[in-house]
Image (tube, rainbow, N blue to C red; front, side, top):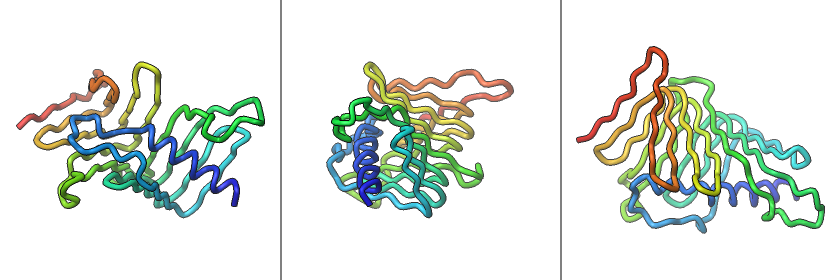
Length: 181
């Protein structure tokens, strides 16, 4: 029970840091909203610095949703046992799918109209890595980010959340596409 609470607190801190609204969204930041995570199974290995949610994973926080087959969270551990849970920093969050026909989906609804979706990101793998100068989001395998009339499509897509910079590198036998309109 205590480990479940610790992991939920950790995951709350992680998702709070994973502020995906910066991709041109006008939505109000809602990182203090309650976080609800569901999955068929859950494992926390605090000693080795990771948590795993498996099968039918859904993360909901106010107007944000993430759905995936698996969710992996890696975090630094403090050597000092007296440190509190919130002192631990996470290294990365990785959401994956087993079937590219059923990709990982992140969506953000308009804060003023819950029927209106302001941002959708889909891919086989979505990875978030925080940093001092950047918060890096990597989408792999059929990556798509769509907002309003803009759509970025690539096999591999990097997005710097802090500086709002998208980068789609050249991938062998693949072309990236940007749709504005």
